[in-house]
Amino acid sequence: MTPLGFALIFVSVALSALGQTCFKAGVTRVTFADGAGVLGKAAALLFSPWVLGGLAFYGVGTVLWLFALRRVDLSLAYPFVSMSFVMVVGAGVVFLGEALTLPKLLGLCLIIAGLCVMALDGVR
Image (tube, rainbow, N blue to C red):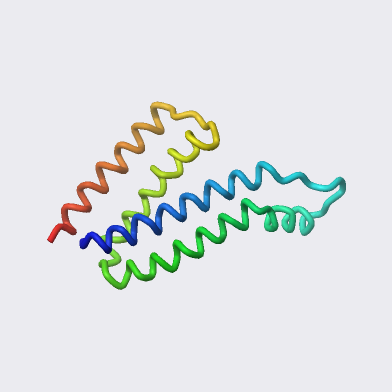
């Protein structure tokens, strides 16, 4: 995998993780009007500035992902989407005050080890 291919994948995945973090921040800040129906609640969630920001991050990340797929085999690129799990846990801990438990940490270590093994196949 070339440095540019890796950079495109990394930034794309990071933007998706940032989008998820914005989604969580957005939905926890929304308050619903008394008696709001499903459509009113959905509109309140959708038009939250944080949720809209998350959608924007996803959009840019998707465009970068398309450029990455032009350069990297799908069978090598797609497993790197699992980096988002690591990034989202980190963002949850740092920005949302979520707990980093031992099972989460062990799971993240397994993901990272798997990515390292996959990356060896892409070294040219």
